[in-house]
Length: 251
Image: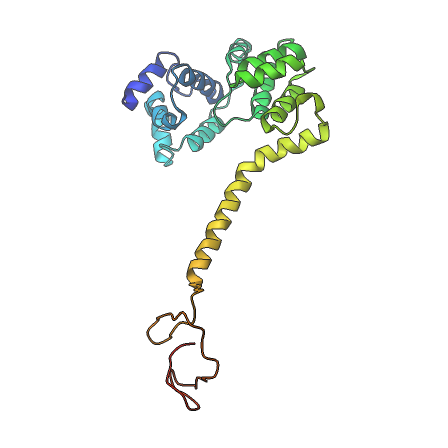
């Protein structure tokens, strides 16, 4: 399906962004619409330009942000600021769903912000239920629900612990969970860094051209399997003998 056709499906659920409202609240609706239509996140950068008014699209294009979803989002969020209305915050709070690659902590933080913006008296238990309902994994949400966490942050810790698989949520140690949450956020970066270092080591080994078969001739580059005759001494000139013996170019 073409990008125009995909954007048309989204625009049935959310109006084009024209700058008359805050971009952050509009973005939340855009996310919900894309998820409702089950559109892969890889298609979002190509769909977004069709969901902007001509004026807003020109701003993005002039800055070279066309196709750069994160860059365009940050720019528009910074330029077009507006707080949620109470009704809008309530609407988004109840319909919020965990996005791909979004951590449980990020989801909980966003839900908390929307709850504050809605100016509603949301109890800790209700926030936990909203959080569980927003989670992408039914298995993890069920495990958390069974443990009955006291607030949304305890629910995040239980979820991270279960996902890590190091131990069950019953044995959760707060200090361990705090470190685990930090490590989970930095994990992908560390793995990427390690992989990069491994590639550098591989490149270095290739440039060294290490050969374990035997001595290599510096004249023709051939390698011989038998060990170098230690009795033969090489002079300063390549292949020149300083004492009697056959001429060789092997190191």
